[in-house]
Length: 131
Ligand SMILES: Cc1cc2nc3c(=O)[nH]c(=O)nc-3n(C[C@H](O)[C@H](O)[C@H](O)COP(=O)(O)O)c2cc1C
Image (tube, rainbow, N blue to C red; front, side, top):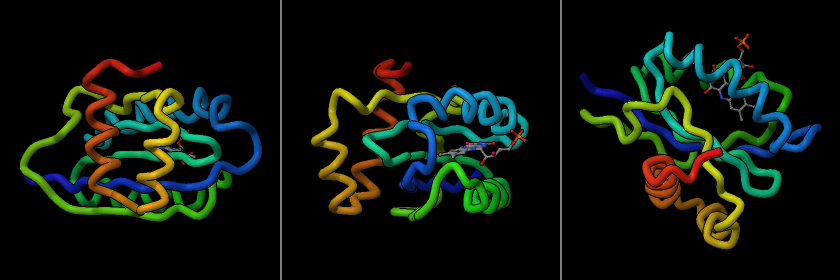
């Protein structure tokens, strides 16, 4: 079955992303499991970065929800495509730790390098760089 895959970045509003993420994961993991969505989410400074994979209709619906969430703003989809194979089939939402590689992440964000961010957000989850 074909799935859509996208990566976006957004800017955290209000409380620190590190703290907001606990709540976000409490909703994301069960909701994504129900919607057949997988992916990974992390933050770098005040930026959230999320990789999402799933049926196009489910991804569209989630993006609608995300655009209305006041905990972030400036959501910008850097790359969207489709695939026959998920990069992260076994995570409803993996929490990846981007803190140790801040300069690399900042460069990818500055360059709006969606492909680079997809590779990074997938690799870190597989390497267990999660928290
Ligand atoms: C950066 C960010 C990423 C999020 N990712 C997801 C997600 O992957 N899945 C999800 O269901 N909600 C996600 N949310 C939360 C949704 O915006 C929304 O609050 C939630 O889906 C509402 O569901 P609930 O009523 O079950 O909590 C995210 C929010 C933020 C700020």
